[in-house]
Length: 87
Image (cartoon, rainbow, N blue to C red; front, side, top):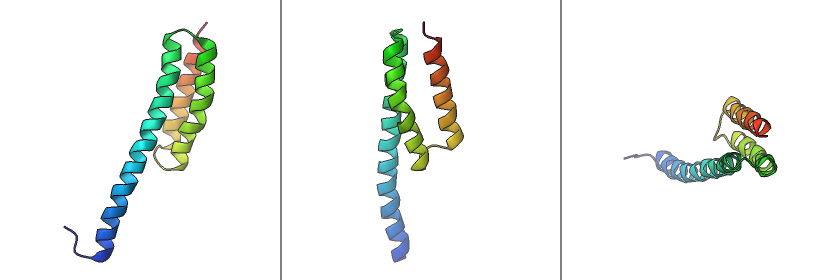
């Protein structure tokens, strides 16, 4: 267990931040899942609408430090390709 006041405070802050990051990541996954559900149903209009909502959410994860920029770009790119492939 930490002995210094600053170390104890850091432990409390880390716990709060972990909860926040987990909820952000969960929210991102939910938006991605909505796009994938629309893709599974072969509904191009719904998939495009879901992707339009998912993109800013994924990039917000980058801003908040939950995702790396390249990871977010890769996810968005792959979703975009799949949406365009739906006929």
